[in-house]
Image 1 (cartoon, rainbow, N blue to C red):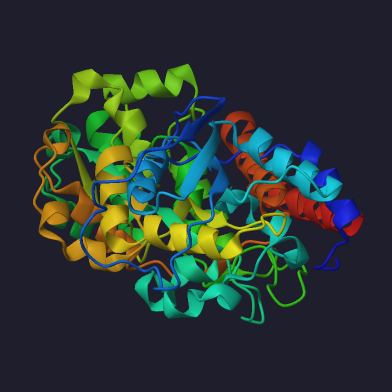
Image 2: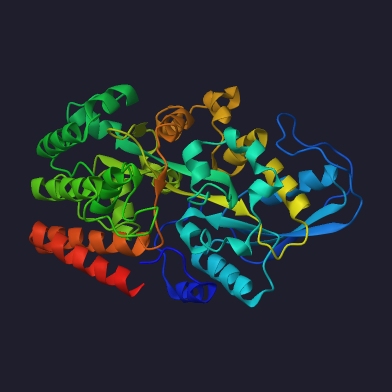
Length: 450
């Protein structure tokens, strides 16, 4: 499969359905203009924006944002300090429509915004069509690179390292959410450090899972997809596709097979539940305490919080053997924008350390700048829903364990095929090896046709 595709072929991707959940959620449709008269002051602290010549030219920057953020509020702060810069926002919580609208605009050569929030699940749609975006390295991004988590920054960097598509916003480090009451019932440690130590290898995780189910009569882990993700995302460097030429490597990547076999083990030993992610039955199981652990990103805590009856019964431990990431986005500058300098200065400011801390506190966007993790206001707040734990520290610990990984343009479709194979093993008692072989055949056919 050729890694680089023409822009015309990119239009075909509009019909693709992406299944990754948005980190953050919420947000309404429509547009609004964030304008404030002069006066007031911006937040104190480190500002990534380079000093330049003050301009009085009246400039309105269009900004297509995604999900729940505090970027409109921050834009109003920015306008107070830069009265000539105003913003027009268009916000949506529909990831697919959001990115399809940009693809259409870029293909037509008109209608794209000055600033576009790009979700990581859609990165491969655009990273190989760099002519449609400003290279942020040309605008001064090299000076900011060291501020951000290395693996996060590289998600928006071309393979040869010469092009930077976007500045990192939030991230979705994965952790183990566990029920302390059920852990105690199974004779497990209930404190985060003790629970993490009890499951600090995947072999120990499986052993604990089997024992937990035997003692409580309940599945240890909630569902196959999240268990598979937990192991899969620890693949070093690349998962299903070679980042150099785009060729399929999922059939030979030992971490992919390890994730598949480990999930099969959980199915066959009975410690993985039979719920479907996002289903009402799964959400009811969360509330009813029908399983012991959930392997998920920082933003999935919002789903757990919806189970109000479980307040105080959850805490957060670390994944065995490493960590992974699910979700997060970037701020990019489509080339249709005529004010790249001003747009870059704004996104550098809105994503600096102080403002990422604000975005975390206001909107739950977990910071991609590790310097935030040592801020007192970040580390001192206990969360009573999670048993009084400082959950920001748990997420930060996971974030700093993540390694850079390449996904590839067919990651989601490939992932779905493998998870369907696991579903057949779970629900139909299908032969795991035959399902694996069938999945690999389907994926190779998909790759050949792409």
